[in-house]
Length: 224
Image (cartoon, rainbow, N blue to C red; front, side, top):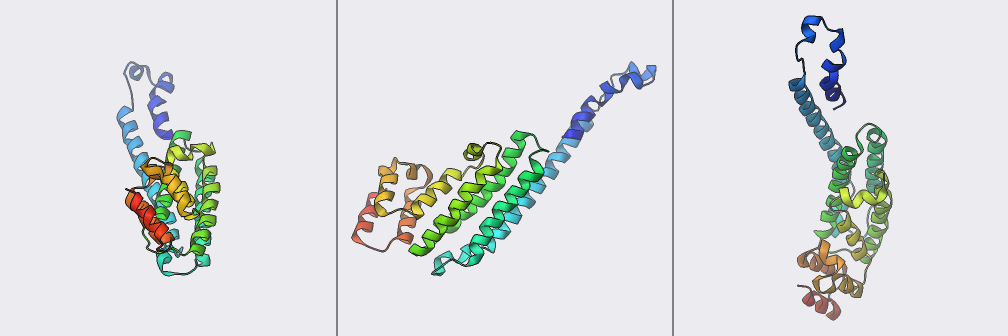
């Protein structure tokens, strides 16, 4: 984009240095500018996909794929989450002073959203989450919730650029909540939990997190 911008102004800047016969002509590089912009955009999008794939590959080695089959999380889970955050922080170091702020925020927001979406999917798709595993997930996910906003120039902007951010924060609350607290957050389909999760998803989480008791059955029946 930097080169495309200068190509757009090139003819004007050097017009006085051209032979008089050429100065009378309306020389522009508009066509080449558009081509260069398109090439630059495609290259950057490809690099974004590459960076996203790095994070997704890290999460594949996190042990979260076996979440519903283990009684405790392996050490690789915390290590992978911290590595993902470090990767985002590295992108901040490289990109922040190079890209326009709006492009930077959209780019890192897109990559961070892929990470968050992957974490949400891995947790909400399992059938059983032991209490100690849920507690560990709360601690680890809170580390993500604390550090990820720092990759943005203004930390509160993360919810604007990471589409699933509020859903991720709500998932953390559910993982550490009691049945009563979940009921309050659902609020008959009008609470903050209902804004981020469907009734089916909430029921799936409740079944995974809590043993089959009368209290659980009553709550499940009330979520529609």
